[in-house]
Image 1 (spheres, rainbow, N blue to C red):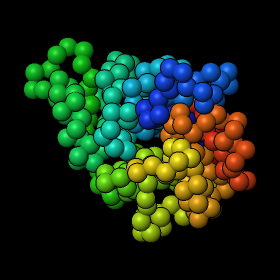
Image 2: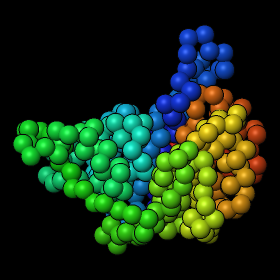
Image 3: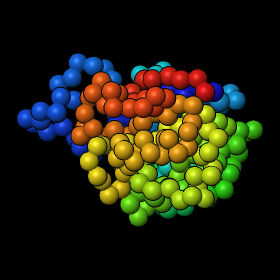
Length: 253
């Protein structure tokens, strides 16, 4: 299974004029973070998790020419705003693109992209095949995907486990029941927004604590805000087997 980190950043903590944290002026390509999303190649499938505002740029950068499924974690705009750009895959594949999401995410998509779901279909609009999911495993072709419900302040968000790989974004807390689904993963991807306390995202220390609890072979941190600091600086704070992901990073799991 091949994982490509399409984006590892967030809309929170956007750089401002006069900022002195060093991220906006950094020449390190690892500090150029688009909104969080990943591309998974597994069992012949090409799957993308979330389509944020940078979706088109990310797909073009990685030369992704096939999309078998788009799976959403939750309904916030930094994870859904780019869905319109799946129309290119409609053109290439001559088919509707399967969209997997829980009911409240689907409701939000229907409001935000009403023209896609209208009874009157305008020529050239994206064509989707909605697949409603809940907190039970589902299968795409022969690949099982296990939802993991986490809490993002008061909003339920789905992370996902595929084989020995677990992907979680926008989490603050995870129940013991849901943690059981994660345990045994060889590779864990988890959000770590910033060093200071935050009401809806794990801090760096909280993410490190979870990584140690799960004890995966390798853990990658994503959904990094501008306030986290530079890649080089944060990497120095991390224990062994925990890494900061960056846009364009490719791993085999």
